Length: 104
Image (cartoon, rainbow, N blue to C red; front, side, top):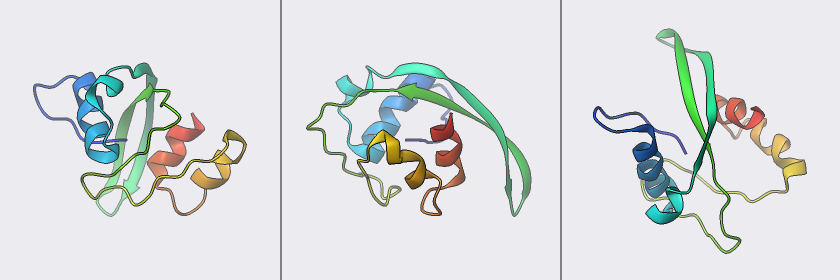
């Protein structure tokens, strides 16, 4: 999940908000996410080159959890074996941010 920051909110508060919006993750489960670090990079758009820092959190989900998008920003959810994850995230279906974060 990813999203922009609002003034006056912590990174952890954004984790809860974005996981609810993008995957319908219950708040009590989202609060169990563990900070795993940051990934910084530059990205290019039609407006130029910009720095970006992503905060990375890890969370083990229950086997019966079924994500459901609430905000229309996610096209699909896929469950794949870790041995095949790189094939999925490095194809053209995924955006650059997903590629960078999964590679980390």
